Image (cartoon, rainbow, N blue to C red; front, side, top):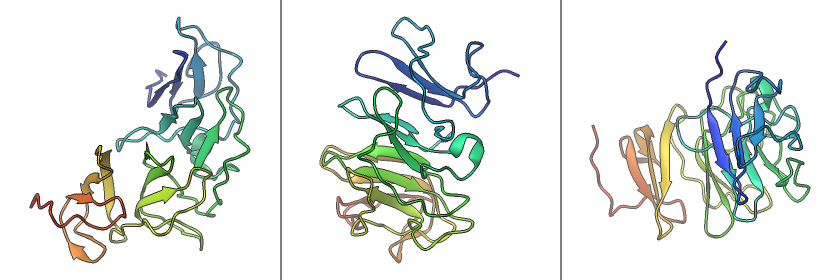
Length: 212
């Protein structure tokens, strides 16, 4: 079978991180998440845990390289199974787990992050899809925020209806967040498919796109 590349990130030294949902992305590796050197050869020194694999996502990056070289991964758990390392993992530049990152495993077999964005504060913006079987610590459907160490920041939690879904999100220079997808309300206010959020997570009433 032909592997379709579904995740891409570039580290500060020019190394390239690539992933696919298909095992064996390279002939030289059985793993779906690998690193290439700046010249394109397989870097065998990069050995992430086997159940840390970026989620294929149309909503935005599932591999996010921080300015310090650490790697945030919207984690699909290898083959879509519940991962030991939770739905958002962070790796050191070497591929080893970052011991300073701790995200509570929300015990949700559909615990996936559709997209990641790094905020200027060092916090991480997460597009959270609907849950099939949500545990008590599951993030609400919509946009979640994790601290620089991985803990949930509940004060910033714009809520979509249960079946709402984000297809893309973008961070403006002023910290406001533009989101689009399939939804009809946010925080109880009717708004359809395109909205802008304030840095607090509240709906920006000054933005009225009036999408169908």
